[in-house]
Image 1 (cartoon, rainbow, N blue to C red):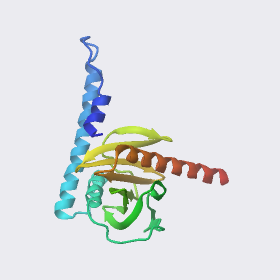
Image 2 (image 1 turned 60 degrees about the vertical axis):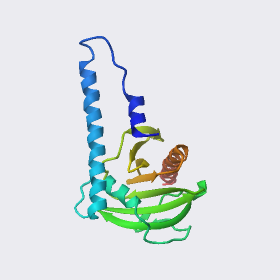
Image 3 (image 1 turned 45 degrees about the vertical axis):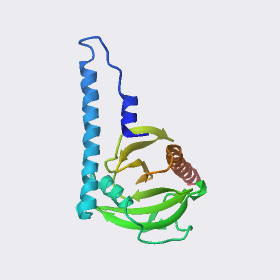
Length: 205
């Protein structure tokens, strides 16, 4: 499912009643322009990251683009399936869904540490990154909620991308060939498992 399809599904139907829809349409237009500009900034960041390898001095509005570019690079470390935490960041735990961790990389993007895991399942590939620090500009609009967590979707660089904010970290997963239902299922499991863990820890305290 592409970003254009999501936009089409969320676009309001036009009304024939003159004089009553100008303000709502103006608001919709501004929101749409904002989303387009956000995606354009991320696309520019991807181009810069690929062309120049720029990581230092990246603003929070450009981080997602650099992370997407990094996800298209090769891992720098081969690891065992038991690896969970690298440079203080916990990798997405999706092995229980049949994904096998093949490698990792750790990068500094602006003020953010980014830890990325590379997974395979049935000849499909998926890359998941955990981004430390303050919230970043998310690529694409919110398409669903899981336990109160907003999940964003976009389609850039021929990849479906889902991202959300989880426990003070931003998580961004992407794939060029994994079925859509797999991606949304992973997002729901990761956000739900974290929420359940947080509630349990709070109750125990």
